Length: 573
Image (cartoon, rainbow, N blue to C red):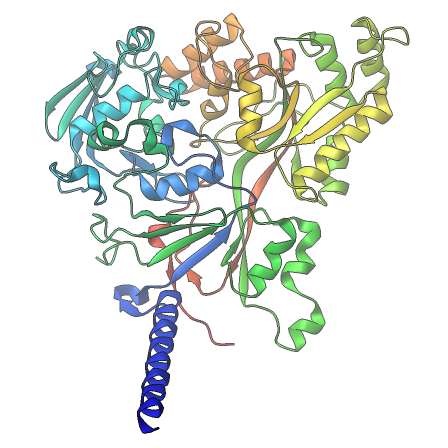
């Protein structure tokens, strides 16, 4: 009888030890553990949530901000926006020189930068070289299906258009205008002296890829990203994406501490809107993005809660940004092919009401153009749009719509959850169009990936979308509408083609005179406004709620966050 008792005792002790070990590991993962210079801390898990799954983790395939925020942790670009003011600094590039009157870009790379450890490097070096940069930029000029960022470099690098048309493969050859000098130096010959080329290199879609990894995985790389960034993909499921620290990351902070600080970053996906605030209050997530003003009480808690000490210690982060929200439409088919219809829609929308009543002040109405006025740009030449239902109805009649020929029901694609800010203002747009013009709009809630597929195949009529400037310059908005040759782009959201616009846009990125550049940019915006290429609604700042234990948080004007600088410091209530 004594032997079973001893076995049971041993079993209980073993189980207790295992529980203690698991508990200890869980605690260690979720708590900062090591003090660094400058009162920083290593360790812990930082978490936030997304309303849907990521669309892609391949830099050149997506332009969705939620995807690029993750991608920028996996892949470093040559240069990057370093802070909230959008200052440009070298990243993988040790130096970049512009020569030959602006037509030659000489790049010198940092040595000792390693791609994350992966099976693809079993017999190959992991060090990032000029060959990887040449491969990345050639892929960005190719007709590979994963390249949806061709507008960034296409036509700017000598030989890029020929490279695209011939269907050349970047793993076998590079664009003729790119010359590798040695393993850590290369030159890029431009077709013209573009004044914005260096800034374009900061775009997270141009994070540097490994040529070896592409040769090993091919297009499967979109599911298995291999970068040189501060984090790598630890695991992906339907509900959470986990990033883990790159122990061999090359960067250090201003105190000499090796980055990143965090053990892991967890991104909770497919999170319902109603789940976000409970997750935040229970410290399951550390950050809430795009917090609706009308839901502040849910997030902050009531005064009674505060008196009882139930409120989670937090801070509100509001950052001036260049984020715009607008409606886009298929300009290649009726009814939006008709400019009179687009004018009618513009005049039927009361943007001020949407911002003040529906969004409760969470946004600035875009009644004048689509580029937000800021320190580096404004356009006094634009006409302010005031709602005018009489003119709007006359435009519809002039377009041929009346009782005998009623306006068709419009399918409106909305890639947001019901009850979100986007859902609220989109419903108000539909209501105003129905009340003012008698137009029926059918909202179709759809995922971003499916929406983009419908747009690209021409099966979308009207859709909600948005844009954040890639860097502090009006060009980062104007680039959306540039097509040097009609139908030449492989972008999913470019239906607009205007030869005069394209000429003015080119002048704006070629001139070295700042006054001329501003004149051309303003002229470009006036064309978009006069043609009603899109229907601007409002611009907004980034509005976030952050757990007070999160330190080192900084966002650049494009909405990208450097997670490598974030550290956790526990706060006692």
